[in-house]
Structure formats: C-alpha cells, structure tokens
Length: 201
Length: 315
Image (cartoon, rainbow over all chains, first blue to last red; front, side, top):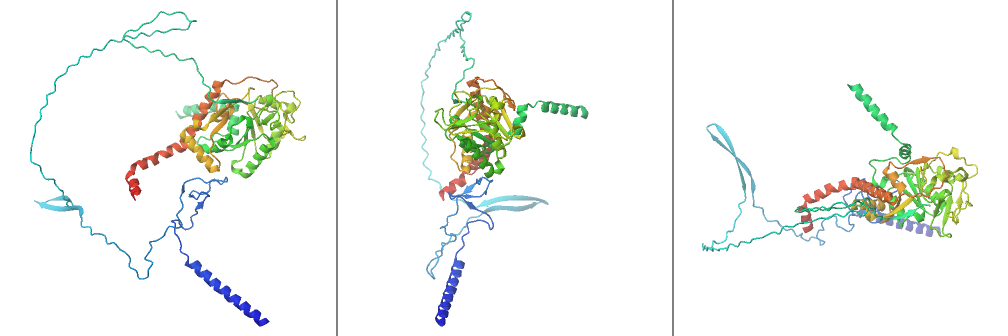
C-alpha cells in the first residue's frame, strides 16, 4: 500500500517537474514586441483604445493631453525571412549611381597673387531637342475699323424728402440737386428679446 | 525727486483700496477672480443649485464643463447629499461658495420644484437649515439669487419656515420642508449669506450653446468629454450669476440684513439681454485665450510642409 502511494507521489512529482520545465521554456520563448515605449515609461490606455500620454490630471480621474493610437499587436516587429530552411533571400540589387555633383576650387597663381576660382559641376543632362522646322513666316495684317461710340449720360437729379413726426413742427422741404443724400433714421433704442425668460418667484 | 513720486504712488494705491466696495470685497472672498483661469476652471469651488423649473435640459452639463459643481433637484435632501458627496469625492475642488438659483416664494422659503402643478415634486428649506447642513461640508458663502431673497432672512422664518403664511405661491411641500434644529445658533455659524441689496424678482435666461463661438463650443466639448459627460447644448443663466461672473459694477450684495417689504419689481428685459451678450463675450474670450492662440502655430506648420504630407499620402 505504502509502495503504491510512493509510486503515485513520485509520478506526480515527475509530472509537475515536467510541466514546470515546459512552462518556463514557453515563457522564455515568447518574443518581445517593442512598440517604441521607453523602459519605465507609463502608458495608460482608456476604454476607447487610445493611449494617453499625458497621464492623470487630477483627482477627478480625467485624462488630459494628447492621445495616440496604440501600436497594432499583430504588426510584425521585424522582416520575415524565408520560412523554408536553406531558402534564398530575394535581394534586389540597386542600380549603380554614376551621377556626380560637387564644388571644386582651383588655385591660380599669377604674378605672386593667388586667386581661387570655384567651379560647380554635376552630371551633364542630356537635352533632347526637337527637329527644327523650316522657317515659314506668314504675316497677317488685320485692319480694325475705328468705331466711335458716343455715350450720353443723363443727369440724375435725386430729391430726398424728409417727413418728420406729426407732433413735431413742420419744417420746410429740403431738396438737393446733383447730390444724393441718404438719411437713415435710427430708432432710439430697439431691443429684440431673443431668449426665453424664467421668473423666480 | 523720488519722494514725491513715491507719495503719489502710495496715494493712488490708497485711493484704489478705498474704492473697493463691500460687494467687490465679498465677491473677491467668495469667488476669487482668476485672471488666467481656463474655461474649465471658471467655476472651481463654486456650486450652483437649480430648481428644475428654472433650468433647461442638460443645463448642469454646461456648468460642469465650466468647472462648477451643479445640482438640480426638487428635493432639498438630495441636493444636500449631493453637496456632501461632492466635497468628499473632490476635496481639491471642494465647494466653498453655493449659489442658489431657486425660488424665494416671495421671501417665504427657498423652494425647488419641478413645476407649478400643486402635485409636482417640491420641497422647501429655511436659510438657517441650509447654513446648518452645509457648514459641516466646508461651505463658507451662500449667495441667494431668488425672488425677494432678503425677506428670507427675517428672524421669524430664519430657522423654521411658516407653512401657513397664506402666500398662494407657497404650494404644497410634496417632498417636505427642512428647518434648522432647535439648538442651532445662527450667531455661531461661520457661513456668510449674501443676497441682492435690492429686493426684486430675479430672472433667468435660457441660451443655446450654438450662440457661443466655435472655439468655445470646442472647449466645452473637450471639458465635457474629460469629465465623461455629453457636451451641453443649452443652458440657463440668471442675471445675478452673469453679474457676478462679469464683476458687474451695478451688482450690489448685502449680508445679514433682512427686510419685510415685498417687491414686485422686475428688471427690464433689455438689461438681461445686454448682460447675456457680455456673458457670451466673456466666455468666448476665455476660450480664445486658452485654445485660439494654440491653433495658430499648428496651422503654420501644416502650411509649411505640404510636400511631406503629399509624400506620405503617396506612400
């Protein structure tokens, strides 16, 4: 009876040991995803999925400050190599860059005086020129008839009549010729009530 | 040469100090003016109590976005519990000043109600009871913006209201009347109760958020979202609240003195409209100072790098 128990216990111990080893291995095998956050920095995330970078504002628990979209978890962190063992990577060789550009200085000495000439050079550009067409010049002379239009502007005479209140004394009519007079009468104080009012009683 | 200049400066300073009115002094203590206040901090430390029938839907959200603590209920008990809870939860923004946007019932009791229907939810509280209940929560100033509010300070009803006063506006107290306890002594209270110096019927205007500038609307939306509430669409603001916010020199507040006379005077409509325009301008200026300037460099930067934007778009 005792030997059976010992056997079961040792089997259980072995099983637990195996599971522990497997668990440790799987933890160490997990790949780390770097989302650009510095070690030790706090990134809080609210229910909408936005990341608050400014942190807690005050005791109200409200977040303030900018927020950004969190990094996608399923985004690859590095370039995928070919899954097949021994497979060749497809490398595209860039074409050679033969262009040149720069600035050079030439030292010219004449009669003891030194002169520096700066020359700027770059890759010559090929300019495609179109074939030159034969010179066929055609002169067209157009004669525009002279049209004289006489515009006669009629003289506008505007008369403004001001009517005063009936209670006021009658003033003589004022007529203005060749002068436009606009009289704007502003009411003393017009108040437009636009808001609903509630009275406290 | 220096001495006369110093004397002159001292004289000018003394004149300015002397020129501070009791109202200005009271407001400076009850509602310190923050010159560089953010729009979401305008009402910091101030709680507003609205009678539901003097409010508009979503009104409290407007005031919360401006940093006020706002309470709107027809039950004074619920309002008092709300004040206590707020001050426990937010000690850094605790209410020190309470502004009452309620009815004064012709100076017979502070009333909050849903409507004038006799069966509607309605409750009353005496000024003494309010002092007694909110003093323990840390409130130090109560500004009553109600009709004939100075009559509320009459010794006869200061501690306990008279439910048989005969006033037809004193409708049934369906949710009860709160009076001060027997042993409460008003002289030992540290709370300052302020009312308008002249008794009259106070008015409240209903405005829409769309009347504010786009920057202000954006600022309110940001503030509301940070609090986890829906941005407001309309608001109700009393003439007295606007006067306090704008530091209107025509505002006159009185403390501690009661009157018996009942007033039927109403402020002219033009005054309310003028105050409303000034209020809108004030709020717009605040938001512009906070958000308007910050937008300019961002726009410039965007204009400078059109090529990089198009390049990234191509990619």
